Image (cartoon, one colour):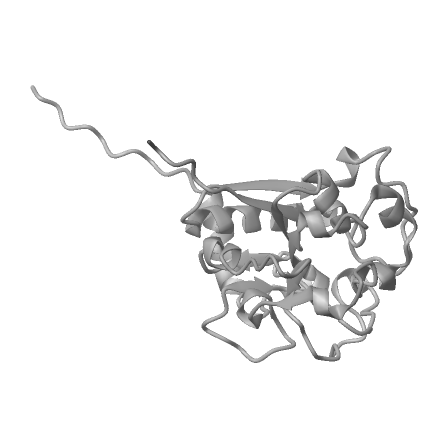
Length: 237
C-alpha cells in the first residue's frame, strides 16, 4: 500500500509592491523541497469581508497583521508555516518542517537585536520593539492558535499580535535555529543560512540592488524566467 505523502503547507505574505518577491520565494522553495508543498498567498484582495482592519501608518506591508489568519485559514487543523515574501529559500523546507514540536503553539527564530537602520524599503519607518521579526517566520500548531479568530486579528493591537500576547505565556513559543530566518544587513554573512530574509530591503528595489545575497536572488529570478528547452529525441530512422 502506498503511503500518502506529507504535504508542507506554506503561507506567504503578499505585498503588491513586492509581487516579484513572492514568486521568486515560491520558486526557491519548490526547487529545493524533497516534499510536496502547497503555497498560499496571504493576499488582502482574497480576504475581503474577513480582514477588515484599517491600514496602520506604520505598516510596511499589507500582510503585517493578516499573517495571523493562517491558522483560521487551516480551520485550526494541522500545521502551517508562514513567511514574509522578502526571502529566498536556500535549503530543503522539509528540514524546517521536521522541526515541528507539538508541545508548542508556535515556533520562531527568537531574534535578539535592535535594527541598525531608522528606515527601510520605500522609506518605511523601521519600528523597534521586543520580539522584533519573530513573526516573519512562524510554524503554527494550528489547533493551539484558536485565539486567532478573524475578530481578534481585526481588533488586537499590533504589539499584541507580533509579541504573541494571544498565547497564555512565552513558554508556548518554541525556538528554531536562526539559519531559518537570516536577517540580511543585521547579521554577519552566513554561508550556512537556509532562509535569507531581506528585511531592510530586497534587491528588487534599486536602492538595495547590491545588498548581500542579491546575486543569489537574481539567479533565482532569472532561472524562474528561463524557458528550458527539451532535448531533441533521437530518431530511430
